[in-house]
Image (cartoon, rainbow, N blue to C red; front, side, top):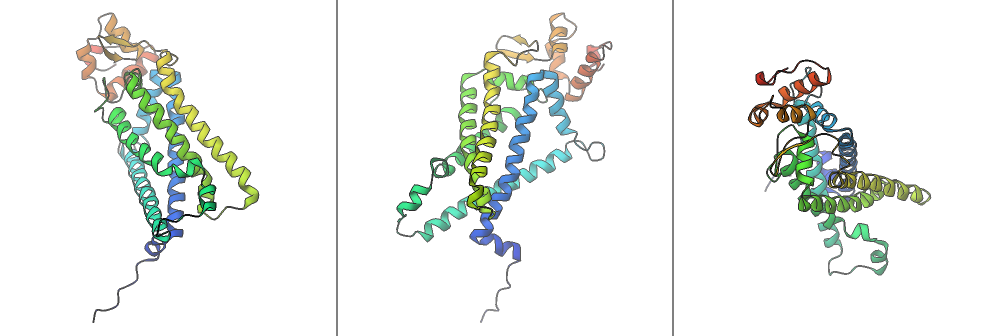
Length: 293
């Protein structure tokens, strides 16, 4: 006779229930919504030019530095977001399976079907699209695998290099629209998942969902449109053939007048480029041949 199994810890038991999974979906959804909002706001630096966007990107790597090693805080945030994604996806898939088992035989009432709007019925589809685009986004702007002219640390240049091409820009637009639909239903339903679904607040919930999803959609759609239209090209980009060498004015001017070669520019580290940009803005003498200012 086998000894009785020890009960799982309370958090595990809670997560195994439908209510627990809905709570996890709501909490991780709030975390991911916060990330999407912060990411969009940070990317608005693009409208201030290459320096502003690149310094913003560098500041993320130096969060809490020197209190903590450089990039450590960023990696802690990344790991937290990865866990939020994993639990969000697992909870969604588990709830789908639980609902299918509860409706064995394939029957769904007419009332239930009518209650599900277009956004809620497309959550699985938009979720898959967003996950696929997330991988593409990382391969484009973080790893550089699919970016035609990638330089690590030069965020502005990488955005220009990618979104000036029709296919990446179209992928970005379609993924943004899918994200907007997903956010609308997610922002609407998270209150219900947390038990905060009093009918008298439904108009407020709908307004919040529409407002948040609309804000993120419009903000993110503006980036490829700005690149294609030239509205975000206030900096002088130095190009060699089809390659965007740099979109930082200081380097573009130096290459133009022969003080810096393309080979020397490519060999500069992120830190060296940032120091040169700061020296340029402070009107200090630049010594490119040493890679420092």
